[in-house]
Amino acid sequence: MKKAVLLSIGLLTVILLSCSMLRVNALNSNEWSWTYAFDNTTYYQGDSGTVTITFTSNCPDQLQFSSLSVQFDWMTTPTTVTASSPNIATGNQYTFPAISFSIPSDATVGSHSFTISMQGQQKELLGWTSISPTGTGGSINVLDAYEKVYDQTIQTVQNSLNNAQNSNLSPDAQALLQQANNMYNQATTLAGQGEWQSAVNDLNSASNYISQALALPTPTPTIPEFPTIAVLAIFLVLSLFAVIVLTVRKRKIPSAFKS
Image (cartoon, rainbow, N blue to C red; front, side):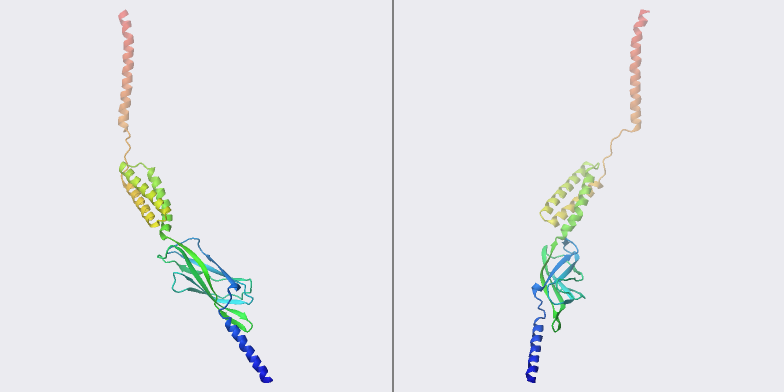
């Protein structure tokens, strides 16, 4: 009888241990969820940033986590941060330390996926067991690096063009300014078509034409010099005086004949 009891206890222990082992790495998908937040709303090729992961527990057991790994689709190995979470009860959340990332300059333009993996423990009947839940479905949108350059350049070129058009320029400079205006308009058209590199090249050409136009000598305004004005004024005064004298003499001649 005693042997049967011991055998039953041993068998029960094996069963419980087996169940506990089966739970390792097996946190059910409906027992947790995750959200992510980036430090910026827009990313370009070659940019860097951070992503913050928040874990929400729907598990009836308490959970703890010691690390988080994030792997974007351009990475060959994940980036990992250590964590020291408190016991997470069902319905509670834990936000991991932010993870830094760098987007390669040659990353394709468009959406890129990433996955997460967490290392932790789950408190069960016989103690804590290891878990490593993983999550998929995260994504980041990467824009063309030339779009960033275009956005940083377009306003400067437009201001330079407007200022140059309001300047007193020679005909040669005006011709260069017209070419700059053509390049500027072409750049905005290409940008609307998503041809960012060509648009940036045209903005650079427009800027060069503006610089060349402003470097040419400005026409000198033809303003009469002071001596010329003075001579002209004296001539007018003398002419007026002569007219007055002649008029007076003509009026006096008839009176002389009468006498």
